[in-house]
Length: 257
Image 1 (cartoon, rainbow, N blue to C red):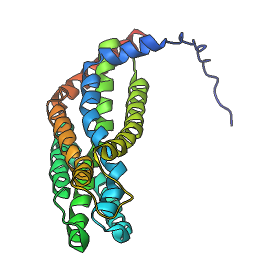
Image 2 (cartoon, rainbow, N blue to C red):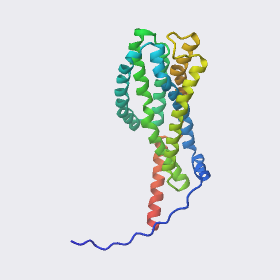
Image 3 (spheres, helix red, strand yellow):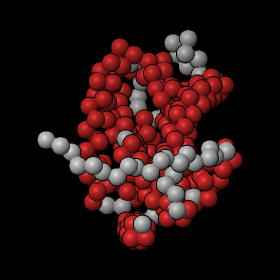
């Protein structure tokens, strides 16, 4: 058996490397991307702050440290089950509206954490509210990457270049940075207000501090992020128009070759 001779591929022309300033301008010029990053920031920041104090909230405030493993064993399956649920929701409805509603539900569940009684009486409420909050917040894991794809299409139509890799890298860098900064800020804020993890009984300031960081700041952050996501400009109809325009450009470029 023989293989017919084909045409040699044209030599690859390396594009000049772009400066950091040029990369930054690509991001800034994409208005929907900037809107999306701005919307993600407050909710992710306070969620990271809350995560950093969650064990202290359960152990040092509620006095349920011996049940922490049980609480986490309930949370993990909920977070995994949430992925296909939110994926289905994002296929049926506007992704940004799904994410916004999920954040509102997260805020409601987080607010309830601040009213859980201490001691064994708080175990059942914790086993209910904490998984609900995690289940709802996980919607961002599904919706936001898909929305990054939408803003990438917008950027390609705007500039004529596919910068999806840059947009994804910026999003990943921002979220990783937020997790680190938020965790440190949460512990620092709780300690500064008066929470002391080394004592058995917290002062009123200490109780307020751990409730504020773990339960109530996430309400504010989720509400702000939810509002900003609700008003996100790229709808399903707008995205369909963008994809149709990109398809027309691709066909025009192909016919010109």
